[in-house]
Image (tube, rainbow, N blue to C red; front, side, top):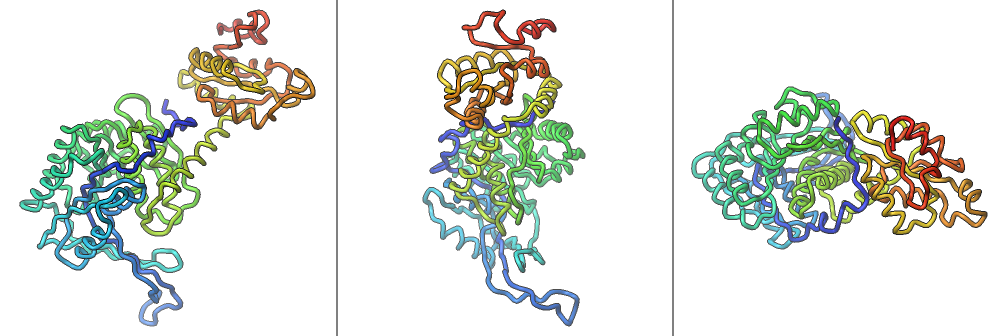
Amino acid sequence: MPAESSLAPGVLTAEALDFAGRTVVVLGDVMLDTWIDGHVERISPEAPIPVLRTDRRRDMLGGAGNVARNIAALGGRAVLIGVVGKDDPGRAILRLAGEAGPRPGQVVARLVIAKSSPTTHKTRYVAAGQQILRVDEEVAAPVKGAVAARLIETFQAALHEAAAVILSDYAKGALAPPVLARVIAAARAQGKPVIVDPKARDMSRYRGVSVLTPNRAEAYAATGIDCAEAESTERAGRALLAAAAAEAALITRGAMGLSVVPREGPALHVPSRARAVFDVSGAGDTLVAALALSLAAGAPLVVAAHVANAAAGVVVGKPGTATVSPRELVAALHEEEAEELTAKIVGLEEALERVAGWRAGGARIGFTNGCFDLIHPGHVRLLSKARAECDRLVVGLNSDASVRRLKGPERPAQNETARAIVMASIGSVDLVILFAEDDPSRLIAAIRPEVLVKGADYAPEEVVGGDFVRSYGGR
């Protein structure tokens, strides 16, 4: 059964977000993004179209260039490799990339100039914060001959600097099959993780990469499987892995979040972190940049996916092809951790739904209870050992009124909200339920745990619910 991933508190160590100085080589389709901002006051008398009165123009790196921008914005160092034409958009890209310089947190451009191929140029016209028109100027054709050879040579020369590699495929021609085969083989020979943002339907052209990151539409085009549900998304992911001989697939599903399908083990489904969606332009570039930097910093794939998901959730709340700063990313992750904590604290009805889902997946449920007013190392050891005896640990927590009846009017030292949050922050605890009674008999009868745990200072016959749990084969 596919699992919904939960980012345990504390799993985002300093190392997982230590992006400074991490170099990522970005090879792919580089383009110029131009934004024309203005305002509309009337409809044209010549045709039923709005008349845009322009206020400002912004040029920025697009496509693979936007991936590089995002890496730099997060504090990493991007080596950008691609093809530009000998034209005004190409010169604008060279100027924009040249302004960045070679420092950490910047973009280093090593671009191949193709005299006979125009630079891809996308111009977006915006009024009142909304795009009203996009004009694409491009000739999408696979690179070949001397241009392809120079791309490969440039990539191989930069590879020793890389902690990770991104192949940013916008189907404009830079990642022609012969180029892909050579650069993937070179990167894997040096043990570099290779992340691909794919556009091709034929995933075999990316054979041997570490992680594929298609969106839902791209996954459907490649597999014929709609990723509308968790189960179908996992099937699509397995099909992608088989076609590309990849180690993992990360499928972005818009408002449904993303799914990580590893070669071995179950799929994990991460809900969307977007608070408000203003503009999805470039969100995939932000996601793949954060993913690559996290992997470069040594984070496991699941943690890297959470970081990338949080970064994408921030950027879609901004207009245009925006970037995310380290401060914004850390704030989003802290908010996510806080939500994960409170999501563990539930009432009995919701707890029973969660327990039923866990059991359907074959999990053994453990249960323990107490006031846990002043948590000490003995409590932590007890909870850790309890979790080792089951697959999911549920903790029943006495309410404030119950603690006062049991321990006197001066207790508890911490109120039930504080005690529940502290309990939820312990990694071995999966669920916390407050109960108002003096003992947890009602909870035990409803949950029917396979394992009931109390400390060694209790004799077996003193454990509330012990006889009931043993009656149906529990222990």
